[in-house]
Image (tube, rainbow, N blue to C red):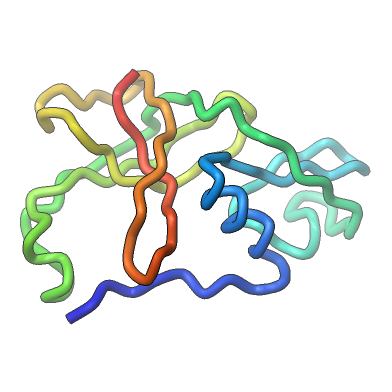
Length: 132
């Protein structure tokens, strides 16, 4: 069984194209300055349509996390246990990522992370995190 893969849309295509180059993009509203990720066609704060793409530093901190010991589907069975986190990026948006290459006991709320990129199913490159 293969894992689900993101399906790029007109709104998300710049994000996924940047991931393929090892860059993390987010959106900033030119009207009110709000930053957001996941990509949308409008500002989630003021509903304006005037958004710009900005490049993230790839640095942030762990807001919350969990370690999954049970796979949600057979496609993830070989990966358990794995850590999933919501991270606060330095630019002010949140992102959900897997935390890679560490002992799960090392993960802590408030811990520093850096974004890395990992090729997934069907050639999609996904943002992930490592402890910084």
